[in-house]
Every structure is written in C-alpha cells, then in structure tokens.
Image (cartoon, rainbow, N blue to C red; front, side):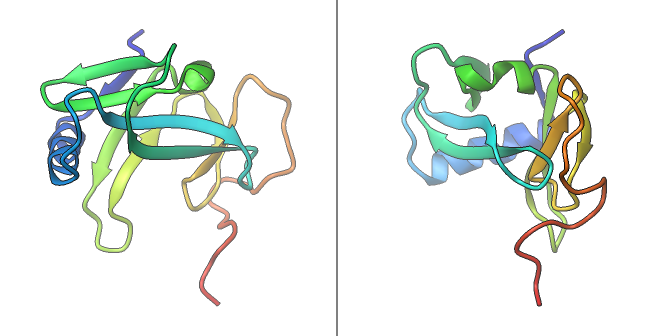
Length: 129
C-alpha cells in the first residue's frame, strides 16, 4: 500500500499553492493529526518544511509531507482538492477512519475503541448561528 495518494487535481492545486507562497523546493503541504475535534482526532495542514522523520511524497512540484507521529493514522489516505463553492480546499479521504464528523476535519480511527464524538455526518463545532 502506498503511503498516500495525491489526486491529479490536488497535485495541480498544491503546485499552484506552493508557487504562490514562494515556497522552497523542499517545502510542501505538511499533514498531521492531533487529539481533538469532535470525533477524537483532527487533521492539520500547513505549508511547511519537513521535520526529521517525516515521510515525503513528491509528484513533480506537488509535495506532501506526512508528520512522523501521524504516519500510522494517515497511511493509505487520498489527498484530493475540492472546488465546491461552499467547501473548497484540500480534502483527506481516509480509509482507516471508522467515522468522521460532519465538517470533515476530524475522524475516529478504526484501530481505537469507539469514542464519544459526533456521529457520521453530524456537524461539529463552529457552525453558523
């Protein structure tokens, strides 16, 4: 199994993003996960340089960096880019997620006991009032 897959659309948008930020040749979209969010773990993304131990997936100018401490939770994911009017941005399709929150920023891994987060499709935190 590949570490991650980067769709063609995500490759194009990521290359454009890195160019617009005048990122160095070694910088990329750094992905990680941390405890939090309504489903137990939340995704984090930022343009950054790799840290020691990170995994790097490069396709042309598109570069995705997976934080070393997040590799187990992100292995096998697909990175895509959505052009939806109300929800544009990079998306992580995680086959190892038992469930995800409605906003798509947090998930519960299939290798952990079920938690008390939001149910699939339920919107969590920060909704418009």
